Length: 250
Ligand SMILES: [Zn+2]
Image (cartoon, rainbow, N blue to C red):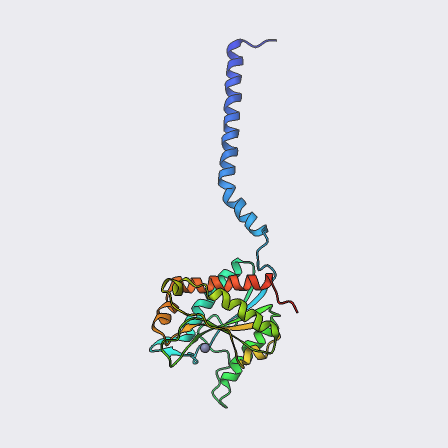
């Protein structure tokens, strides 16, 4: 039986409203969930340091302040930059192990036969070896009697050939730091080898990065500058990623 015309009109209106509500809901869901979708995509996406284990070793700590200029202590700069480096490496997919995350040394704090320093260093070695790291980075701040000396220098131990390769790789990236370029300062050093206890006793390629000279007025200011610290971290991260992309060919 045919419905009266006014009822058919009403049905059309109801159907139109239902369709409108459905379309509106669908659009809202899509808009609201685009953030969530992005997050999901972000977690599925392959990151450049996925499956990499990296140990960050902030030099000194606790009773051992490292080098200093007045009350500016190396150990604090090392830790600050290291924590920032950790955040960025984790974002890039790495599993990061820190030798320390607080202002403390890594020995058992017993003052005795004067071997606290060695104990501190061997604990750092143990952390690197036990975690089967792919790479370790020790962060330090330099000092020179020559107050004009400035800029980062990467040090390596000759126990492994890939240490030098890694050091040279990293130095290249650190040469790109903008603060020196802006000031037109010649800060470019060559990598240097040295007999470093940690680098000589690990089964892992690694380097010691002296981020700048606390004895130099410009470096001192830069080392405490948040923007500059971020750039150091960014350059180190780029250096690490590119090292894994182009490992040494033996
Ligand atoms: Zn140091």
